[in-house]
Image (cartoon, rainbow, N blue to C red):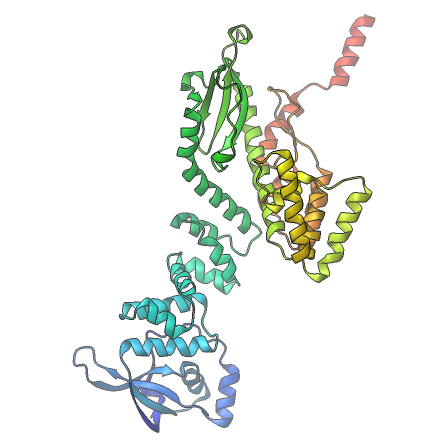
Length: 471
């Protein structure tokens, strides 16, 4: 690269913004224009001759390499010429210089950095050279480049709205492009973490499904579709394909009893064949019973998803000093209400394996908590406070009444409400799905409301029976 050291005054009419400038938004130029109007351009621009595409010869115009904001502000201030240093650079050197200049001033958005890196690669610069010249790690450069795989308009909108790099990095966990873009659209809303968790669960379901089927086939048979609703099969449990198949325990009586399973889109139901004497005459479940099962399953799935969000938030949250009193208050008030620390909840949040024997779990839990207390006492306080909520996959807002012909009804959960109040103090954002569960407005509650409204009042029935007896 050759550079003339002489500063020349060049007409602004001959200076053009570089078409490959990574920085697209020059920001507010008002203050800079006022300064230039009063003091002139105090720092020269760096430019290269604009070469004709056909002739390869200078056209008389120049491309700006360094100083795009100064040029735009000078035009706004009414200047007709500005000081410039004319240099000769290869196309790759031009892009690299613009990229480095803007990054040193933190003027580029992550997407603009990604565009700059890609332009350098397109011009023949190797990835190692990009890493060396930019000063970024290879993993960071690769992450920036992956941003270009997202829907551009949506990404630009989200970056304008304040999307963080941590939010975008979380999207890298999703391998499917459509799933990434769908979750991208929720960044900045209270539904982002929920949408991300759901997409990750769906991704895990696809990966785990063949493993689950292989496991089921080792001790059970797939129930024929014509027997799906038959009463000859006793319900033994429902499992999502997102769960780890290695954590599943084959029933102890699988060698002597006949087991079967039915497949749904993202889960399966395990059943055991009843003895002939136990099979009811009515061979098929009623349409009502099937609808009730579907509603219960929908609520169970949503409740588990909500639990996983709460758990992940606590695990990833760093307790701020100002929030320590809130955590202490939650812990002490729980103990004051007679609620002890749930060892199961504490073990879950500490990541203690669930397949250990009880004594081994207890020892692992104590060891993990002791280590956490020594290294991060604030985190230990947060985990301990959370464990007094007795939060679990089974925590929810519905009541099934244990009847196969009764739709689930909303049941307010004061313990869970109290936990949500605490989480919100820490910055937790309750998703729309969770709001529907908490308010009783979830669609799966609607059939229960209608059924309840149509059922005769029990007190009226008793009064009618007494009247009939008197007659």
